[in-house]
Length: 93
Image (cartoon, rainbow, N blue to C red; front, side, top):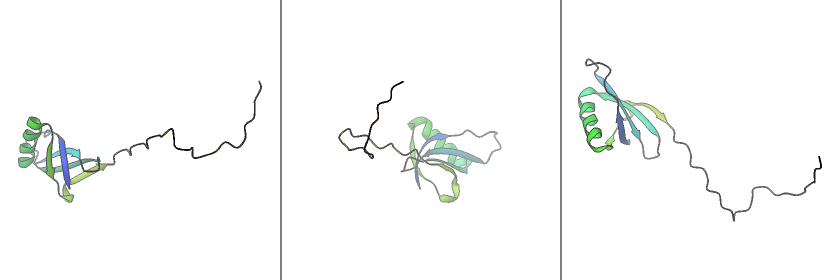
């Protein structure tokens, strides 16, 4: 799975051997994944320098996927309404 990584979480302690990172997949979903600290520290440096880095993540590395919100359908004023008014009634207070 190709991910555009924009965040690498720093290790909680110097003894941590796993570091997590997150980014967006091709569908706009937020993917969080983990990896060995050695390549992840190099990834963190690249993200710091470049802002975003494209990388490949194996399925076993994925920790969570947050689905992207679907784009709302654009409203077209020329499109007919999905319902039709068949009667109206005047209401007096």
